Structures are given as C-alpha cells and as structure tokens.
Length: 389
Image 1 (spheres, helix red, strand yellow):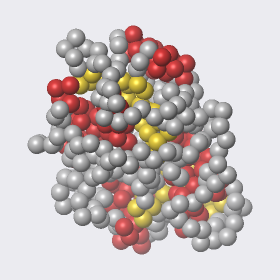
Image 2: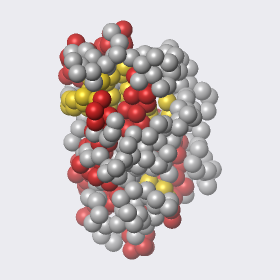
Image 3: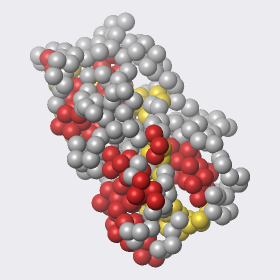
C-alpha cells in the first residue's frame, strides 16, 4: 500500500471538517472529537485541520465543498445535509483526489465513504420498544430531526414500519425538533397543549427536552419515551421517582464517536496503512447503542470504563450526548476531547482494529442510488415484540 501525497507546502495533510447543521450538543461533540484527534500525536505534526460550518442550506455546503476541493483538500470529514444534493460535487472532488468521509448522515454518491449507524435499526427498534411499553395501543408524538436529512428519513421510515402494524397506535402529533433539547421542549409543549392525554413519545436527539415538556405540563404524569443518548435522558430513565410517575423507555441513537472513526479510517487510507475500499463497498456500519433504564450505569472517571455509560449529574450538561467513547476504536479520547476538543494527555493515535470495518446494508436513497434494500431491512435486532400486531 502506498501513501497519498500530502498537499500543504509543509507536507501536512490538508483535511477539512465540514459541518452542515450545527448548534446542538451532538454536533459540537462530534466536531470536538475530530479536533482532539487532529491534535493528538502524531497527527498534531502531520495534519492541518480546518473546520467549516455551512448551515442547513444544501447549496451552501456544495459551495464550501467546491472551495475545499479547489484548495487541494486531501480529505473532507463531513456531516452532510442531504443524501443526494451534494453528489455531483462529491463526485467531482473524488475525481480530483479528495477523499470524502461522511459520518452519521450519508450521501448516495458511491465514491464517498459513509460511516454511519443509520442502518443499524434505531427507528424500528426504538419504535417497537415504545409499542411494547404501551401494550400496543395509545396516542404518541413523533419528535423528528432535520427535514430532508437522510438520518431523519431512515429513522422515521423504520419507526413507521413498526407503528403501521399496530392499529391501536395513533400518531397524535409529528414535528421537527432539529435534534435540539430546547426546540424539542418547545415543540412537545405545543403538542401537549393540544393532546394532554398523550401516552408515549418516540423521539430522536433532543429527547430530554421532551421529558422537560412533560414535567412542565404535568409534573405528576410522565409517559414512556424512547430517545437517543443524552446524559440527562439516561439519568431520567434511571430515576425511580420518574419511573413511579410513568417514565419508561430506552436510550439508543446516534454516537458522536462516528466522526472520530471516520477521521481515523480516512487517515489510515491516506497514509497507506489500509487499502481503500472499492466503490460500492464504502458504506460502513457503526453499531447501535442500546441502554434500557435498568442498564444505566454511572461512570466514576472521564471515560467509559467497567461497563459504565452515563455520567453523574453535574459532571456534564444534561444535553451532553454520552456515546462519545469507544474503547476499541477510539482509545485516545477522554471527556475533555468531547467537551473542548482537547487531546488526552499522553495519548497517541492507535491503529484501528483490522476488523473495524463492517459493511452496512444497502438503503436506497440513503446510502446508495440504483440498489435494492434487503428484505429484512427493518428487522428487529435489539428488542422483541411483546404484543402482537
């Protein structure tokens, strides 16, 4: 394997961190992870990292990609705003020698690498968990992410595959919460004003805001909520007082650590330490976290050790997304990495395990274009139905 040729004048790799949507804890942590890794030896001497935030307009991210390509980018690690709108620019960049590594969200251009848990079943598994908690009937809210984003679309299609099987499940309200606690709280409060008798909430990131809205509307009545990985949500799930008021659910969802995995994998390919994957083989699946209330375990230190998965109250903000560590893939990271983008003292970049890459299934319109989804694309992998459709 031959390394590529770094393009800066001083022989560093010219790498861009390209965000579309930003402004919530998840996006900040994912970006900080890449920044921390880029400051960790030996990358601190070999990588020139530039962060660019484009916003939610696909045309703005297209324009930023074009500028990065024109500036001689060796690699672009990116959270893309659209699975399709960026394809033409990504293809042109690949032709000019730029590696594209998307994390969490995906594109359907086959020359790009997609590092994502998007096909690992968050929507369908969390929906079934909610159905189980409700005994197969009840009014629910759907708290979604960013309109038009591949992550939101895949999650919602998986969830609806389950909900449609249960005639007793009524979707009383559906709204976009932009993966943000404050927005989720505001939108859930609006829905509660119209439907105070809601029985459950299926939420994407921002789920702790849904619990806050429930508490504000009626502090004596909570309902089952399935959501992602905020520290506040996990603490709430394990709170016996909240459980006595009706709270149940599971914490699953998107790990910010995907960004770090994408960055390290890209660097191994650039440096000739790992063979590039063939086009059509570049969809890589990140595993789905799954933490029911009885599996919440507090950490004593600043990393995930001894099976812990949640930090004590006051250690991190309630909106902090807990899935920032992966001892096998990202042993270099600590809490300071996710919170502030700082390298861990005395850490050095460790090679990824040889078997780190797991191929993701095809998902038409999500990570591929002219492809067919497997028949079991919405099969349950984390939970079994306890009520029959």
